[in-house]
Length: 356
Image 1 (cartoon, rainbow, N blue to C red):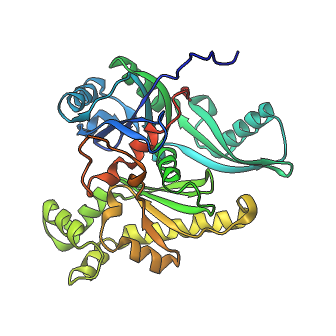
Image 2 (tube, rainbow, N blue to C red):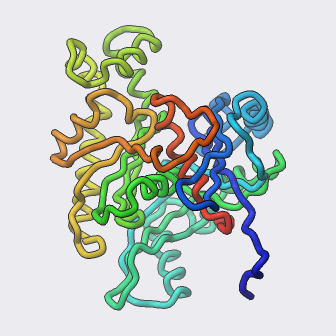
């Protein structure tokens, strides 16, 4: 049955549960023009509340979420319907090429692929897929599977605090949606790099996610490496990272040397997914023409220039905020905005979406 003329889709808000931090945002996308922020906020929680992606201390996380709503919310959240992220690092993904087939056969092919390549019994996984291309030549899709204990714990938590979970998806999918908002007319594939607290997510985005991966070592790990190498406190290491990073300064070589394990691994992984994309051919076999970085670690001075030089691809930081209207709300400052990219992407999810 089609929608009645007086039907209105109910709004939702985005919730991003990161490593020891929580971010929320609700956007109004119903009006013409840029999405308008209705409310947003940032809070923290003891990291022991989550173990390997699974929520294990519901009360501890609930107290932190309540504190965020009561003490750190800018604007308001007008709905109990929530779209929530799960860590990309705790999901399994694999690009697939299939001959032309119907939806039922696609689902079966994806299930068989999961059984063959994922080191977790299929009975313990929720399996989904996103089709990147479908024509007479065949189908390109990205299979994503997540352990049931992770998804089930998130649903139990959200329902336990009185929220209605309507969608769960990997953090990188949400970040890619926000990237698409910033430059929807650009027609060439790009590498997205999301610098989280303890992991770095990577993906090739070509109208949709084509291939993605995760490596260990995020923003917090970079601070720790600088502190260990230079024998200084965490606070001093953070200050050096934020003030100088790997940009040109008398600290450049020392900081770059400290970060070498993460940077080298990052370069290897970018080259690997670019090579995979080139060999398997995305839609139209178009060439990747840029790198886009986001997340808290993307702010580090010198990072864009370093990646451009080493990978021979122009690199820029994601800056879609000119496409978002904060209205009368005080906007996050320039140093805080990158950390809201993922939750903003989650808040952009269509209100009619359902749990998956």
